[in-house]
Image (cartoon, rainbow, N blue to C red; front, side):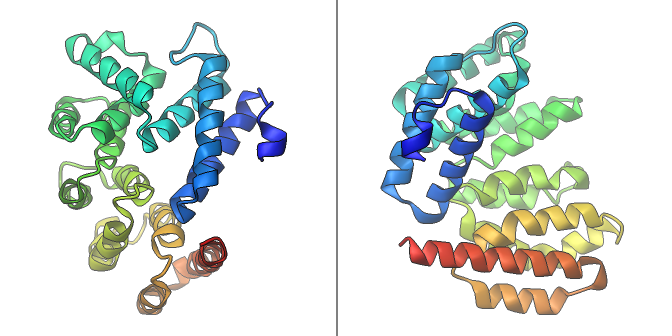
Length: 259
């Protein structure tokens, strides 16, 4: 990747590459991967700028958000300053933040400073726009505080959160380096509640939950995952269990090989 992509400027290719590098780093904590992810993310933002411009191609928006997320993951100082400045401006004027940036700024503000968690939670409770509520929910899963992450996981099963929005929380927490173990523990402890809440008809959501959590959070805990799968194996999810088990084994071997 370092050989062929450091001179790449196509937004779609950079977006995919940076996303893969961030995922690899979350699995392996490899310094070379981290350095390349930072290099490509900085290059991307130099090329497309930190803020959207009129009539830009959608791939640039995806690339911008991925680059901002990746740099924030590594606590990049300038990115942190940009995020907190935009979040502060939004608190004063909700129209000051471009819609394409909102999800990222909310999430990265919470990542950068725990004090923003309650602010975002209040925004969630006060909003009537489902698209905005989804962004706030996802942002809550980006705190580094494990107590708040645990509260967030429990909150997604509360009456205040639509069941169809549960994966916005889980998608954030399961790829949060501070939430990997918490997410799997929560899944094991609450799967029966999730099944009951789904009322036996939301199989697509159940599949997405399993596909997000197990292949990443189950690394190193394969025996527990196998017991969980045997306990809850059903015809409606049989193929999903097979797929996530295969993906977990691939990820586990990859991590072991690269440690």
